Image (cartoon, rainbow, N blue to C red; front, side, top):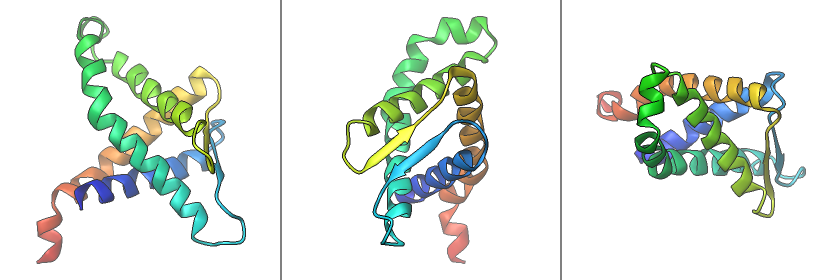
Length: 132
């Protein structure tokens, strides 16, 4: 359940990033079905959460000296890389296409997505409080 919530939060963050003028776009889904477009965003969010859970720790471990040297600013570049990797993977999937622009606009989009998911992530962790 926690994965589904995090994927939904990431999908919401990607959707908000597509609304900003950052050259980030999502295409796919059937225009005739109202539920098709949210499923595309949910698939992108699930892929982003999966990559952040599996590949990001490995990249952060390998880049630890650079992260220390830049006082943590290199983590924004790692977030950009995760967004680029998500875009590359979705370009190979039929029906889903997550496009990104240049480096700087995509870096800002990655920061926006990271901030939104960081704000919403405690909701996924405190699921038990919501039941009371």
